[in-house]
Length: 98
Image 1: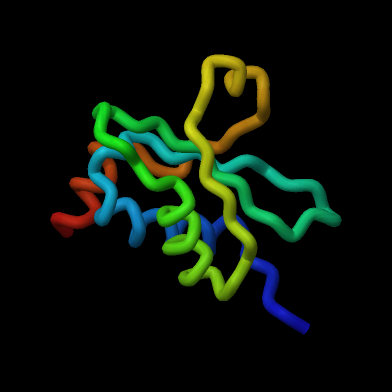
Image 2 (image 1 turned 45 degrees about the vertical axis):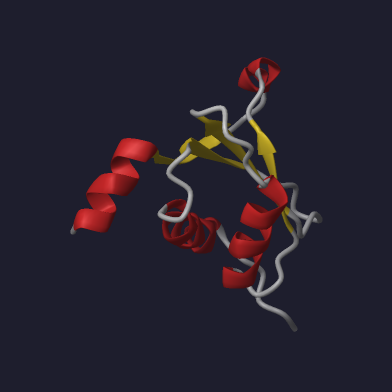
């Protein structure tokens, strides 16, 4: 039976991947239903440079042993969804300095 990534696994993976993507200022985890093995992350991108969200998803997915990760831009309507903030840009800078 394959290990199902938990929220702590996601936090660790996002923390590692975030250092490669300084244009992403905030990362959110979308809680999943019990029968849904997929992981969804929302991101806030600060600059106007194109950001390959599929590439970011592949990086996180690789750290989670193929957990089927999707990454989407955070939109105004997402505030109504239940989200957990995983990491903020300033926090990533502090973590990488330690």
